[in-house]
Length: 333
Image (cartoon, rainbow, N blue to C red):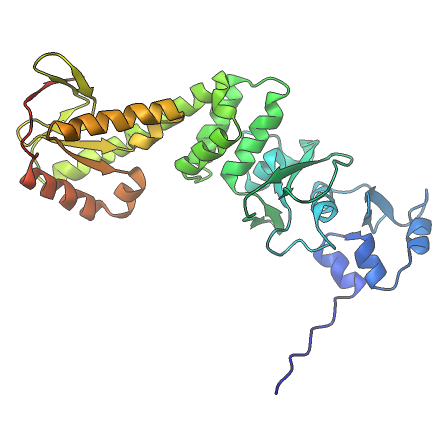
């Protein structure tokens, strides 16, 4: 039987180098340095500093921005473990600054640090560190060696903090646009985090989100139009308001082919921030299907990943046509 010999724990010097000179009392104790010695070295004029409860800086000078973030993570960690499942993650403006967002202050100007921890952790705010809690499994991303929350969660937490001081519409719009464009944040993930945080009820956030979603859907619509044109498919009516011959409203699909009774809904879920909006979208789709319209539901993600498959799906729907469709009036937008 073979036995794996555990690797020896890194020395204090090695640990200090890997954690930017920031360590915990537990890490010091594990290396044979008693609490009395630590207290002595942290006295005025001593070689060390106490940054947070149980967190120390092994130098007399003031901490750098990176050292402040290391201190926040180590304060929130259990037994100094910051690289395991369920470990804390920096979120909010500090995380976005690490990601390189231009719409938040540069890292030295970030005065507070929000840290995300599992809800069951018993931990209080300390110094500039604000503890936020989550019921979901933490999936941190390493950014410049520091564990950060995903962009969507960091944006939601930053806006929650800004909300206490009053949300500025321009700043909110800039942040959401950067998250989706430069940050590469999936728009569905962003909408979900904002909704979970209750931020979609805030007028500045909802207005900015509506603009971002409109831009995303417009860009996806242009890609879809170019894809269908390249496939030599019949020209659809775009943004038509469908009504029965009696004038009853049915729906407003993105694309509609009256001859085939086929409609395309693109990213319809992205219009639905509230449950009421989602119910309205479901009702439109159900009315079309009830009247015999064949509805093809597409997403911008799939359009980008599988353009050929999307084109063939639309082609097949047009070939099949509607199912005993009721003639509808299609008023162009």
